[in-house]
Image (cartoon, rainbow, N blue to C red; front, side, top):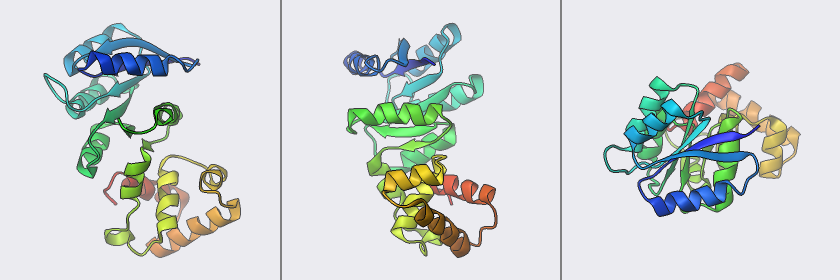
Length: 206
């Protein structure tokens, strides 16, 4: 299935670079571009779009506000933030506005491809540098180990035990043990509650 992408960035050279990188992937098609929020919304009204790759700082409005507008007007279109800002407050604001992921502009090029595939599969994606910040123990989850925090982030991305085991180079049984320990430490009963907590944790609001 072809994933139809709308690029939103107020720098034409950045858009040109992104277009070249994305269209090298057979299942990606850049169907439209925009230099600002309002232009992006207008493009979405006239083009069939599956995903918006959104910058934050733009002339005539910022990407977080635009993300909220997309969620309201086009709830079926996924929004993935691509930004130079690595502060967790930006990440939290973007996710609260409806973004399905957050990629840093200085991340490896393959990260954008993985992020789009993850988001379009129903998951949530963060650049590795952001994931490390999010994985730092804080508040009520401070009792968890660093490995358990990593597992939580992968759970938030919608990954199965097998996928988590592969990504973290662990056995499936070890991942299952981490899940059990997380639920025991946080007094979480079922799978649905664990997933809900993991997503809140990943968004910085456990």
